[in-house]
Every structure is written in structure tokens, then in C-alpha cells.
Image (cartoon, rainbow, N blue to C red; front, side, top):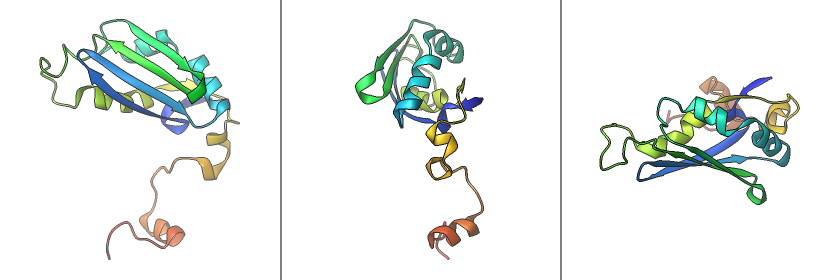
Length: 137
């Protein structure tokens, strides 16, 4: 099934000169195996084609259940030279998490409702579930 990375992983990113550095982290070993198979250099290059004009580098970090990704020539010369209005490399993790991959439906974050990230919902139901309102009443 097609699934957005945001449903099964989390990510952090930053910038150094004209490079975006991203860490993609699995919550569990089965998901990490899927990330290693599906998040490839070629797919990353296609996903970031609008911003990345250089080489995409990728390193699996098996001991952390993570993948380190470096997008070269991705920040229009870096913070001092870029005319972009956003936070440069800080926002690239969010863009990565929008990427969709093929994943089995039995991954822990997909098959167990309690492990799924929250997808919004009715504020009244949140208060009912937690006892806390979204804002002061």
C-alpha cells in the first residue's frame, strides 16, 4: 500500500553551506527494513528535484534504525547567499515526510491504532479522551 513517510517515521534536518542534511528515523526494526528498501537515492533525487541540483548521498545507520541523507547543491548557495524566505535546511525534513512509499499494511505504526500518529479530529472528543481541552475555556 502507498503510505506517506509521516505515518511511519520521523525526521530532522538542518543545513550547512549549500547542503541539506536529513535524518530519517524508523520507530521500529520492521519499518526500518522498509525504509532501507524504499527510500533510495533515485527516489530522493526525484522527490527533491525542484531544490536539489547536486548529488544525493544516503547512508544507512543500522544501529540507530535511521538513514542519513545529504542533498548537495540544494540551498541556493546557503543561508548567506539564498533569496529563499524559509529556514533553508530546517524545513527539508517536512518535505521528506510528504514522500510516499510502498509499505506493507502490517507495519506496527499502521496496524496498531494506539501507535498511529494523531491525524487531527474533533476538539470535543479530545477533551473526552484526555480530560484536557485544546484551549482554555
